[in-house]
Image 1: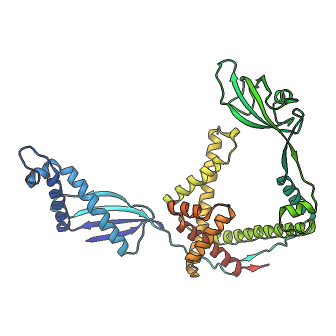
Image 2: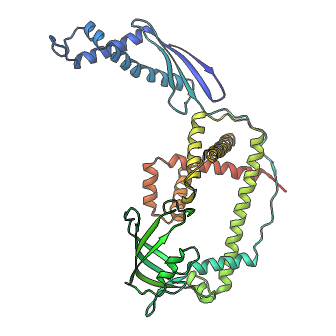
Length: 421
């Protein structure tokens, strides 16, 4: 067998391969025999059809089976023997086959690029002082106060401003008489973002009361589905609740955890805020170090990998857009695509650099590291461990977790070896 591999670029290779005639002929005859066993030809019993008749009648199918049977096998063996592992399946081209002669073909494939790293140890980086202000602690307290709010059922009166009204509502367009879906909604009575008519009509209503009203939506309404339409609404009040916010005192502290008083809660909040700020600072320092390394490193990103990452980034950008921004103009779409490609290229380049550093420094991730990370994922997201494990197994994510941990170890190594100012 003859094989030559040409380096097209840092990440692309092309192999030219020749399979000896005797190997090709042996496989060819085997496939013809297989066809003969299954072929139904008038005048012949199954398995007794002459070789030449089978070959002539099914030649194109036999040739296709020969290529699918022989080429992937010999190509895989050859690449493994040369310690080459394509990122994706090689693309076959220029396949030549004539019975009795060697089979020749070419295949293009991408490999992970070799990276020539600059000196990555001792990168200078500034460490900023981290402090926590009283206002930050107070804001955290107010957030906890808001999360601890209770919604108390209202009795003996109708809807007032500030009430939370659970209602059942259904609309019907006046022009087309078409009904909109019936929905259960929560309305904050009197809120400035509500339609003025809604605030007016629900004021004073009691549970189980029903009303009907019409809203004429302006043509410039941000909700495109309603803009310029007149809708008749039937609304029924199901329940009324009043928001009760607890006071910030020792009692609130005791309800929120094992705190003796408000002083202990404030102290814990201050520690958590400081830890969060330190983590942010650590991330910023790591990003600066990697950016400095990347500026001095040339990396050719395999096109297939870049396209996949680009599409993932673009999907995330689009999914984060609000519903009122569903229509994208052509110019804006091109800007979003350019932004997504830039993010994908930067992310992949940094990823390759960090993996290469991990390789050079012999950094490893054990099975225990992976198991610990999975447990942490379950704990952080408050999901049963068994469910997380089931998802990871079904989606083959274990190696992705291992790779992410390895990259994080490389980041920690760079921080430990950096020159902190």
